[in-house]
Image (cartoon, rainbow, N blue to C red; front, side, top):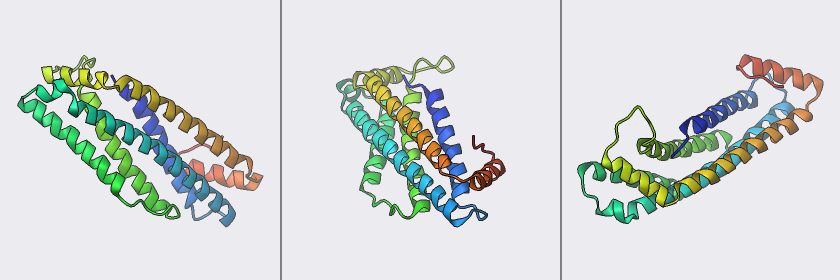
Length: 207
């Protein structure tokens, strides 16, 4: 099933990076040219992270829809299964609603960031579905419905989805590191010192 620890580490790293970039981009002490480059770096990361999140949502929605249509899931009638169906249907509905929503303009970095966060929170609901039916967890007792849904997830492509998403996540992090390196390479010594001071104020490190 899922590897929530790895996913949690990725999300934690991204949250810290986003927080650092937001503080950098809008630091009142930054010179105009430096602030503009910071904003450009932040905007680039938001757009790339949005692409990753959109991919995750599209793929996870398709998987959950397949599970809902799965023959074994459909013919199982119980209160618990009905509750699980409602949870999965609600996830699909949220993804569809977000797909139909008009996104903020790219030039509005703050609203674009909130839009990204909202999408990320929806994807976390998919991950909660996976955790709930991960029967390898030794600290929980599982119902027959848990085992059934886990089988349906695997039968409909969960393992392949996780491999593809992991590859996308790794590429995103690799590309972001390259973007940060390119940003740092164009700084003057004075700008580099300013960045180091801002990073230390916000708990980050510029290497």
